[in-house]
Image 1 (cartoon, rainbow, N blue to C red):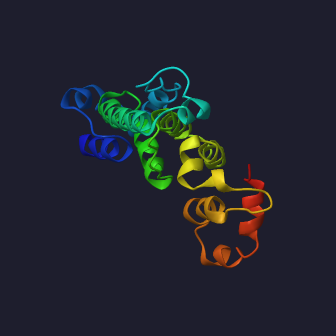
Image 2 (spheres, one colour; image 1 turned 120 degrees about the vertical axis):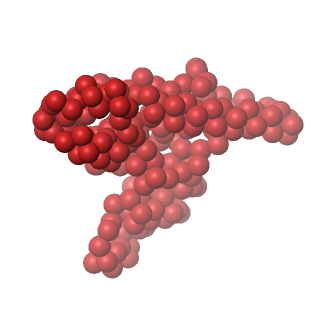
Length: 197
């Protein structure tokens, strides 16, 4: 039984300590699985490196090139700090299943936010929706500034749709069969118009 529990915790989490294993071992496997889900049910506390609101575009326009460079460097350093905090949270959290699934979806809905405010929002959306309905996760991720910027949706206009975001969302994240890919055609333009600003 202990090997099954260890395997479960490696697959559904990031492992189990010997002390935890001794505490859980007398329980049945279904009870252990229920415990993983129950400990991952509460809404996660946001991982915040920078608090407050993101600077608006007007603030950035008024900056010199050197000020913008420094602000970008500061934001990128904060993104690295967010990554470190998230990894630390994964390792020590009681919500192993949620953190493991959030990390899985992070690889599926991959993007590289350079803005710390966008990165924090992206990670939080993944963590909040990791165990929920896929449709809700797709909708929430599609609305994050990190994903919108990464796939150039800010260039999307009704009369001149940028299909990049729609195509990535459909092919990389939703569609898995060749038959669905053949149906794509004009749907890219239509989906891009739906997603247009």
